[in-house]
Length: 226
Image 1 (cartoon, helix red, strand yellow):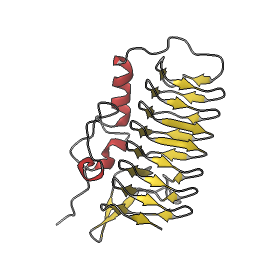
Image 2 (cartoon, one colour; image 1 turned 180 degrees about the horizontal axis):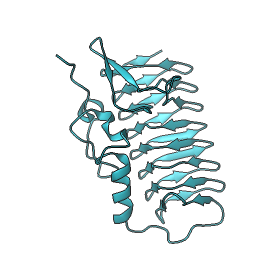
Image 3 (cartoon, helix red, strand yellow; image 1 turned 90 degrees about the vertical axis):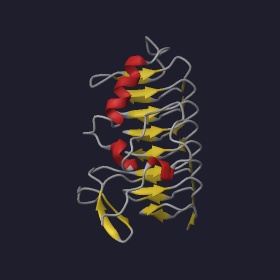
Image 4 (cartoon, helix red, strand yellow; image 1 turned 135 degrees about the vertical axis):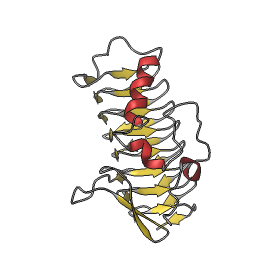
């Protein structure tokens, strides 16, 4: 019998935050499948079409590249000088994007989230209050509410051989169906400075990771990783 794949209910304390994309009933990482009709790409595109309060023009103190899609920034988002955006991406009201941030396609930053100085984000969701504030890499990942990444934390999203990401569940190696998969971090997960997650890492709400620690795998019980 195939192992049961972790759902959003296994990882997050709530799956309806009133913001961000909806999670389906299958594996929690299905949202990151670029081919899915219910995945991040499809939902972000729909959200931008229906969003109100978006800026109709962009300020001169940050730069945008809209050749592949719209850079949708709410009028009440805070954008510091030197940030660069490549569309399509969606920055909600109350989100903060700091100096020299690099916001790549399919980034969805919800209210109260922070994309910090020299942080790079692509094809990822920062749910309300999630913070990647200093020198972080967030690729193909989902950060739950209240998540905080210490300075220098990297969420690695690609195997060295470029192959499909697999995860171990109940002693069985399970394909995820995606080639790029960083980390999925439940509510309030805290990663210390210079920690690294290997591709396909899942940490449930309340987990912590010590500084300079590398974490791999699916962990469905909250604990300290060191």
